Length: 70
Ligand SMILES: [Zn+2]
Image 1 (cartoon, rainbow, N blue to C red):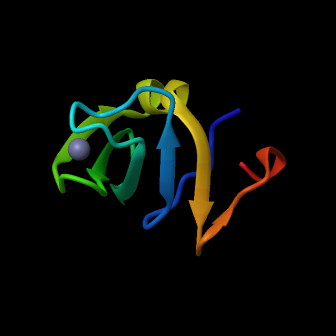
Image 2 (tube, helix red, strand yellow):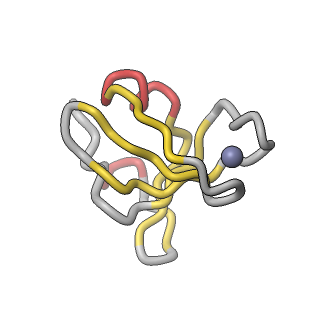
C-alpha cells in the first residue's frame, strides 16, 4: 500500500542526514521525490520506494499523522 505523501509534508526518517537532522520537507512528489533537509537546507533526490522504507512518521500542518492515515 503506497503512502499518501503530499507536498509540504514534514517527514521524520529512520536514518539521519549527515548534518544530524531527521526532519525533511517534501518539495516534489511522483516516482522520484525531492526532500529538503530542514536543518542544512540541502535538497535530496530519492526514489519513492526508498523513501517509504525510511519514513518513521509524517507530519502535516503541524500534526503527526496516525499510521492509518497514510
Ligand atoms: Zn541536512
